[in-house]
Image (cartoon, rainbow, N blue to C red):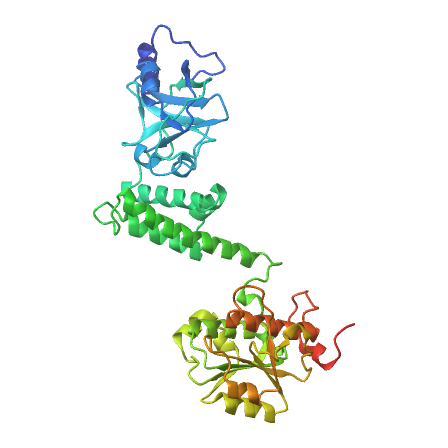
Length: 437
């Protein structure tokens, strides 16, 4: 059988075909295709077919002469949807294709694309070609061995969905190597789950089964949403793998949190109306490791769904209780020997930077977003402090003001001098001793 095939190949070769040297007995013909170098991509299939001899069967090896360009089998529909780098991540300078009756075999609906590596153009074919030419060398071999990969394209809907999400990932800043790892790994991860779920929803087993219409206007927004989610999950995975980063809430173990002594700061919220502000104050109180947050009056208080959302779990980690009257809460704190300060802008207010916060601890009263701290509460307090402002507004947002004063107290107590990140070192040991000179 092999002998018969070789005889047929010899008879089918044109008279001008160059015979292979003895060291390469399988090579039956050599040639080259010269054409202008495209800026983005172009289909070189028609020109290549016109230059090939009518061999009955063989393998055609193609190689691009310049490193600035590569070859790939890709769908023109996909190339109009995303950059060529996303459509053909496995493109290369050399391809090997089967040849039957003078025609190269590749998946229906695809083209033989010559891709400019420097281009990220979408939807344009040749654009402005370079002035210089490049050469594609052609080598025909007489062989019964076909390509090891399938000659058929993947399901059209799946392929289109994969191209769309690749292009969206590239646009969102995820590199080619990260995309290749995401697609090639079998290890379960949150990013991999989102990627596969998008392909399943957008692709289905065929166009009729697809859950999303495959028009570009619908597919690309869905791909961009999926890519945004995947990109965030990949960044989260990198952060968790970096041992030197402590920018996630789980960086400290539950055991470490339990061993820390709370700072003696009590936050009293006097009839705040915004659940967003209250949740933010809970989160700041958690970060400063305050002893307690006391909500008063109509201030939103746990359990409250908006507090859990804006507080990012801090509502569960900070001790809290609710008083119907702010005056009652102030009286209780003063009975425990704590100094109570109201944050308000008054004629007799003291700048927070000029106040020595007592080492024994203190209570900080924050008032309503519109009318501030109640006058009766200020009269019952030990003092009024303010944050000097120099613009047209005479005060800061209540949660911003709370953050400033909480951490000023920690600074005065020496709690901010340790930056090693060890929870055991970030204790309130400095409260029992004078601040460092």
